[in-house]
Image (cartoon, rainbow over all chains, first blue to last red; front, top):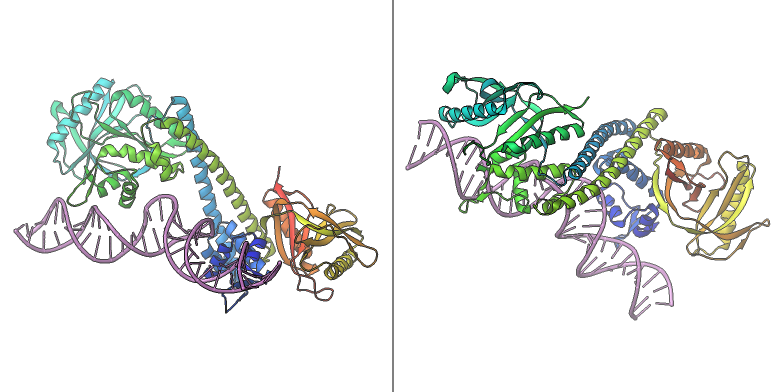
Length: 278
Length: 278
DNA sequence: TGCGGGTTTGACGCAACGTCAAAGTCAAGC
DNA sequence: GCTTGACTTTGACGTTGCGTCAAACCCGCA
């Protein structure tokens, strides 16, 4: 029989660990001195301790290990546990790989761009959203700006504040098309069939933006100058993290557009639906 | 300004999380009502929150993220942090891969062998050990058993109990040689130059077993019958976990050999020095 | 009979929140 | 104006597997 320190040294664990396992009932000392409370371990208990350590190395929790130590029918149980664990480890393995890619792309971005631009891409999901919108094909950016402003202002006037939510622009074409095909409108706080007539014979119609499970999103200040850079940032992020674009891009105006044209204060969230690249 | 719940919903985090970040000083609400203590967040704070979340996804701790959020010179700092993190993630990635292999080999072992044999291989390190030993080449297992018993009994008689530690057998040849070249002796609790004369003109000489950083070890009951199985278990474990054997194998008798020949009560630890396979 | 090193119980700490509980607040409907 | 239900506040405890410390006790050796 060894005292706790000797046994700990033999098994290369800490005394605290042995006391903890005793407390959990995983490994009771072979004998405890009734007078002093000293724990005494027999070398015969080493295999059991080794079983615990081996299972722990496989990633099982102490709570899971307990039942497996019984001599009973634990073979099938153990197999089941391990199969579960395998799936879990595979998942976390992939997560770690993704993290590594994220880190590397971030480092590369710093090296390329000199410093961090404050472009923080994060992945989120979005719910289906009722929408009052206008479809239009614009020839150039000036026209886009005019149309957005028209929808923004007339919509703000004509849709009740309680119903109206945020201004959203959806890019309906691939980004490299000749014309810019856009859907411009307001998201609503609840479904509605109202339609809104704007000045200049345009009209907002009700529809619904579908839910998206994974969106790469980026919040940028709304000055048009940085628009390109921001889009580029999301693009390279998506690429270097092994995703691909899975649907039309959205721009969500997080604040109502209030200032004069060219106003710098706007805050826009760019959203790209993504999925893991094939 | 949004109340905590709305802001949480927008950013897809929990209210608890926002409160926690407030408490840490990572993200203070834009305004706190002095009367009620209600936190109010501006949409302008979303980019900062996104920065936090993005860095958190890279695996940084909240404590590490704090200083990086200052607008100062954090570009180089961030790069340094990320480089550190990358190394760490690479390490943990390899660890996870190893764990996955361990699990799979364990499952395979169960499937092959019907059930768990209680063979739990664990990796440990050993210190350099002073040794009083005898080198001998044996023709067959019978001779091995005789020699081991001779050393065990004469050693037990002639080496002071305070100095004598455990009986150890080191396999000096590759396991497939014709003769079995062994070193048989007692480990000592402290270095000594004593030499011990045994019956039959044999003699134990002082030497030292070198330290080994990584040993694959397995404790088995000392019956010779299971010896083969145990060795096989360690072998396949080493192989399927992408290690290779890096030195002579040792057998450590954890208990003094007391019983008659063939005594079943002994407890032996098999030790194989290992290194990651090239 | 010291004394130095081991041992006991008990408690707190960690990381990043989740999950209550009790009490106070807000906004909407009547 | 009042009620009600949804929301928010602070505070506390739980999670996992021990590390670390403190105060008191114990062992074996000289």
